Length: 257
Length: 271
Image (cartoon, rainbow over all chains, first blue to last red; front, side, top):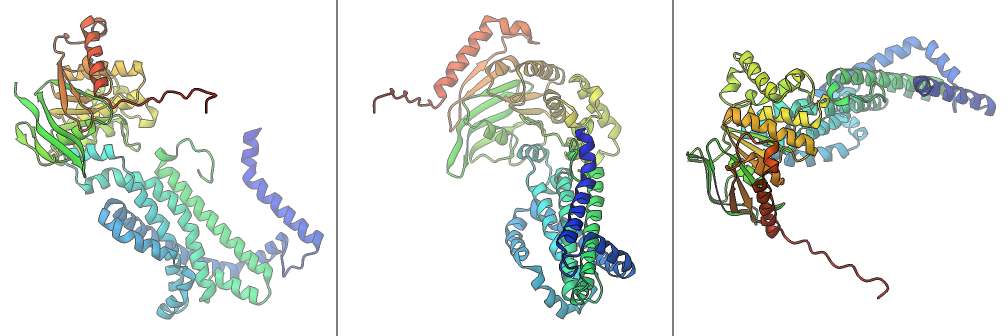
């Protein structure tokens, strides 16, 4: 019985929430420009399918490009910081400082440099998503057991040997865990940038729609972003399970666990 | 017999705290030495000194009659934690040292079959040949420790360093592994240095047991146990001389320990 309930849970809970939302809108007679009901949002999604596709494909593109660069850059940076003391002590304060800067504040500067549109969105997505990747990969490398390090060093292994044979495979589960976090951050980045300075993208669509009081369309945009986020998350959860099954065996919960 | 390992008046300090000082020890080629002592006596420092992972602060460490200045690759190591790589199978774990040590690392592809045979040979001795393609999490603690032992021997080291390899195992598994280790040692004729807290383990396995003093550690007594015939087994435990030796060592170490001050309980009712 329990497993049955567990299986229905992921579908049942959102459905219940949607029904409650719908009923609340009807019961309290909430005006659509304050909070549209789910059916109105669905209608907005359907009626504006083409325009939503036009904007969301742009968002997906900038997010994926920014994210891909972040994965490459973050992984290399993580290996560097995790395997070299010098790199750790000199880079870490810089990284933490950079990460503390609100990325929204950088978008106007990017616009000055690159104009509005695709490039600022890609860069914002990248800036927001590389940090967790770098930190996680570095953690995986820096926490190699001392005894194991001694075993290899006594055999004449160089630091590079240890990183290659132990460090990188060991940091794989950390990398994949961070990818699931980073992909959602990348969406945040590109949507922020589109909201501030772009003429194409879900962020732009939502800004324009809210300016025209088409609140159901704004919510439709939110739904599309959420769906894209969940989809990408599930893709990486799936890849993670395939690549690092040795680290996640036995886990039966979470999306793709 | 010449000495494979010789420590002459060695001291090692971490910053200002001395871990060992005035340490003298000799281990004959092909013999089995054990090192016992109170906790914190610098046994792990001894491991690092002999393997060349840490340079001596003063004195000389001689391995194969040469003073060493860096890691010596004739050594194999095993620790209390088996430290197997979870993404590798048993066989791949055992082969790891050959991917790193010279000259084998450059022959790894060409001689793969020979190396695999060598690994399977070791796994057969420890009774794990049918687990070659299992992953570490599919093995029990004792099995993992046997794999770790195979890994420490795959590159045919002349010196095997063991740092409490059986410390985390239950009593039955531990005694089983003593015999496994003894069997490999009798067959392969390498030199072994075993660091342990277990006095029976030390006496059972070794030819000579070195007792270390409290920090900073040095060897205060060496017990020759070659009188007990090989291979040792159940009958060794029953030998009165064996048990007398255990009691002797126990009192040696007790006298070396820092006494733990046990404050008498305050009588109740009186303020």
